[in-house]
Structures are given as structure tokens and as C-alpha cells.
Image 1 (cartoon, rainbow, N blue to C red):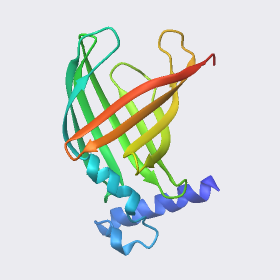
Image 2 (image 1 turned 90 degrees about the horizontal axis):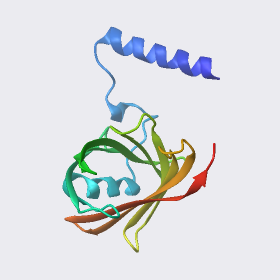
Image 3 (image 1 turned 30 degrees about the vertical axis):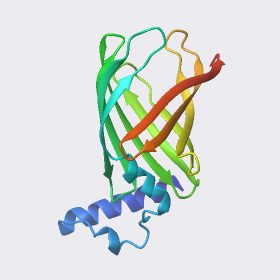
Image 4 (image 1 turned 180 degrees about the vertical axis):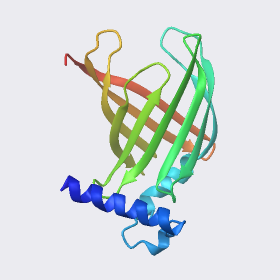
Length: 170
């Protein structure tokens, strides 16, 4: 199964290279088209001033720039700021998986060498996106379940918070 998938990818890449241009997305009958769930990504796009509150410290500030990408299927966010008096940068990719019927995301940042992959759902009644995924506790090296909640307050304000559900050793 994997060999035939790889072969098809190589053939497609080779065909695109030899013709000098890739086929337009609308010409590809296999291409996924953005659906109503992808509208959430457009609502979250923009430049966002961030005020970061961590337990036991004064608020710190950052900037998140979010852009809809890849034919409207994904939201790419670049974050830069200060946390615990240190520079902190991160990148997030968020989309809606039409097969899983869930939102999916991937987070990487300048403080860790691991990637957090998450999935979740959007509650339109509360305007809340709730995502969860396994992460690493940097102090112990154990696995911890992280939950990320984004509430769309209005067109100009979002509240994002994250917490761990619990610790699992390994």
C-alpha cells in the first residue's frame, strides 16, 4: 500500500516538473474543497495582540499573526512574545479534517524539541474551539494531556487558555 502511494506521488511530482506547472486545484477531482467548518479559520485569521497571563507572574505580551493558507484549508499562525522574561516563538497549523470530522492542529515552539499534535471540536453555541493532544512535561519527561481552548468573544477578541489534564509516566 505505501509503495503504490509513494509511486503515485513520484509520478505526479515528475509530471509536474516535466510540464513546468502544477495542475490548478479546480482541475483536480481529488482535491478537498473548504467546507463550512473551514469558515472558522477565516474568523481566526489576522494580527492578534496577545496578553499572556501565567500563574504567579505579571502579564506579558506577544503578537500572533494568523493567515489562511493552502486554498483555504489551513490556518498558519506565527507567534512571537515574551514568557517568563524570555523570548518565546511558536508556530501553529490548524485545519478541519473532513475524514475525521474534527479540527486538527500541530504546534511547535522555540522552547521544545517535540511537536504537539491535537484534535478537537468547535461548539458554535459557545463560539469555543476545544483541542487536546499529548505533550511532554519538560520537568519529568513524562507524557501529559494538554487541552487548548479558544473562545471567539467577538470579531476583534479571542481568549485562549491551555491546561494539562494529568500526568502519565511514559
